[in-house]
Length: 165
Image (cartoon, rainbow, N blue to C red; front, side, top):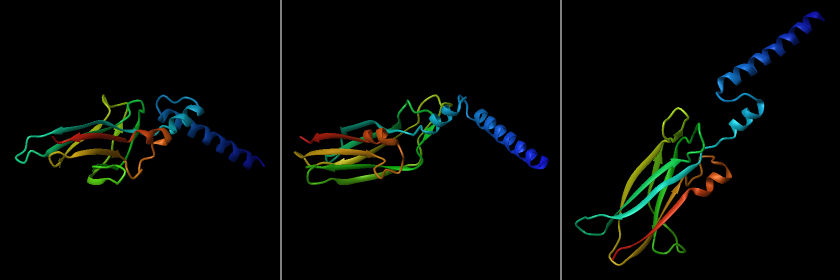
């Protein structure tokens, strides 16, 4: 009987030591409810910038599409892992969209140890005929590979219209 009490006591002490180690390993977390809160934080990918600019080229029809994706600044200590950004164009959104490019982003990190939130920028070029009116669309994480939570999935699309005169 004494042997069983000793093993139960050992198990309880071991669990207590493990709990203290976990609390010390997670900075800023001091209570069990804080551990749950910390575990729920998810990354939130945003399209920080989307600019459509005419460029001067020999044929006069090229556009520059400058795109910047980032993590929402309020979600510290999160990262995305790999995801894709899709860029499309159309003359009529009700008919459908045409792919310009899918761009792979390896990872975005928002760490409390970084001075700034990490961003990824890239530029694409597209030719538009004279007199045509196109609409461009950028979708961050268009395959929904990153779990951003229900609110995070609502800000992954941006669009711009452009008419080549």
